[in-house]
Image (cartoon, rainbow, N blue to C red):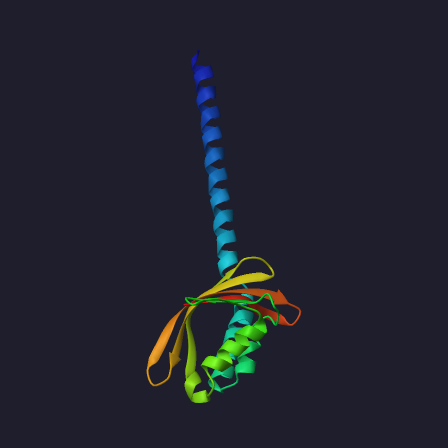
Length: 160
């Protein structure tokens, strides 16, 4: 192979490597952009409003107001260490049974909320809950919320 042919081959290989490198960089930037948009989105404030309204209702002793954050459906799931409760009415019944008075309800706080957008109509929220009464109890939760005509509603609540 003559000198010109070697130079041409080397230039061609360099162009291919450069093109491959630039393609990988562009792909990486697009992937990072998509990850950022699914974890931080415009739905965050709407979902924070739902949880803030729940805490405010709870702290006023208003269990029905607290339940407004949940989808009023038989398919609602509330999962704890003790098992799974199905249906809005059953979840309400459990709350009223275990928290019959405002004193028993205490003061509820949600902390360390992370909202992950799963789609345009589904989101997952991770966080911690804290209930201040005579002593402080707390734990973790993972919620799945669905966007409905009336706003974001919790369809699955896994609290431990």
